[in-house]
Image (cartoon, rainbow, N blue to C red; front, side, top):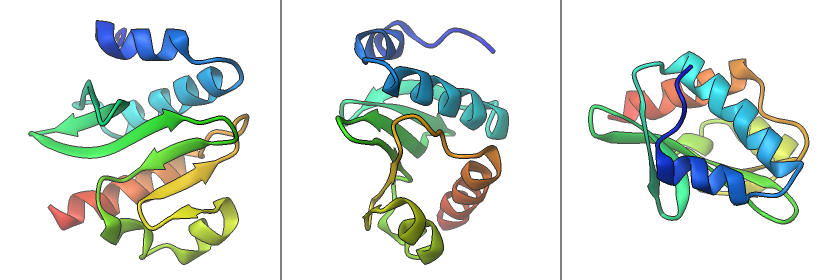
Length: 116
């Protein structure tokens, strides 16, 4: 896995532990699911883009790590995940020390890709 672009690396570097480790674990899992993604900063968070379409973003918060599917239509398909993790219509609130499993990330990215 290649190093993130400078701006994305700077975001991770300034993020405190344990959020940083959770973000980096999620980054690795996201790139396993979409290895052709490019990384950039959008809306002040690391974002994973394929063919010009942002598929997800991740962001550190004080009490959680946010997973953002870049569409309000994705999480409404998975009420069980929203119940388990908490969140908003546009973000899952992942515990700061428990990254989303790769299978969950893959499911969310498939749903996002299906929307176009």
